[in-house]
Length: 539
Image (cartoon, rainbow, N blue to C red; front, top):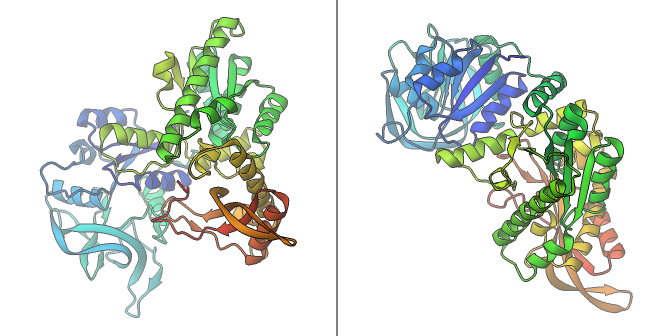
């Protein structure tokens, strides 16, 4: 099925992917591409007649510098609506004959913007009305430069006292631009503004729906793979699990999953993965117990980045060895010719940005890079067009259990980055048990106002092992045992993560259970560090 689409050109803002998220939430298909694509590429992208609009993203750069990126001229000649956001507005102004200057006053954070001119983009969208009857928007700003002169044909659409041109529009050509960021959740009406642009102004049919996507994806996989065989590295995470279920739906026994158990998983997680995929889906799964290998290579290593590299590199080595074994043993008739990965859209965008050096991103995830090149296999990435929330919807549509699909993410290095300093087996065993108690209590404690569990109200929760000993009193004797820290985070996107204000009674219960049930731990702390500067992860 062909979908109508929106093109998002990425000028390097770390929040560009949020534009795509908001568009997708409106059930509209979109793609993010680097801003320096050629005019010819743009025309080619629009050649199928399905391109209905273009969005120009923000950037950290200044448009009036010779060396900085401009939008391909073809964008303004296609006859489709264009929306410029932040830098996207500035480059639109500069390229179409307006003027941009460095501002005396920078604006970062909350602002109240007045809407002007009743344009199609902002008409009847407001957070409050002033005594004079002006519609006002509560928005998030992040800029130093500003547009000081309109390009010909444009009129004022929004303003703030320190930024007189905070939005502009040429309604005849359907060109709109705003200085604030509608894609971030801090802009209260941001989603409504972007939906107005894609659904009303661009008039895109909202047909990007996950339950319908299953059949589409299955057809695509079958066409790509034919009668060849596929090998997939199953981590037990949501992305690889949904990829495995989808590919298995498409090609059945042509898929072999290799589950590398590195000994750094959560309690019983390895057994749960096997029960689900081998037991319920009846997929071919090879479980490789590599825990001794991983722990052996991590011995004596305390540097966090080094630990990550060891874990990622070993995964590649073990996977390569298993792929070779499959072919050599004849278990695979002709040997796998495809490597399947659960790569998702943010990974694609970030790695694309890394190659072009345009995107300025903070990468926090771990994925298995370099495998296709090393194995000489073709790549199958059936989720690469999807965001995490879309992957979860797809998993439910495929019949995977809701609890499995909506469980908290647990990074590839697993307990390796939850143990501060050197990774040891006894540390991992203690941590696993403490972590399981924390998760169990979050799942069983209901927050009365929402009626939801604290597990559902947090986006990530885990326990961290601190390799220091603290004094405790058990009965009449003193004990000297290890410390763990609990971490729970609430977030709507990566900009809004903050520690969860869990009830003291819940923390007390978790702490009491861990100290009583896990011999070797006698102190539990709760991490109240905010992001930024603290990350969600510890190391």
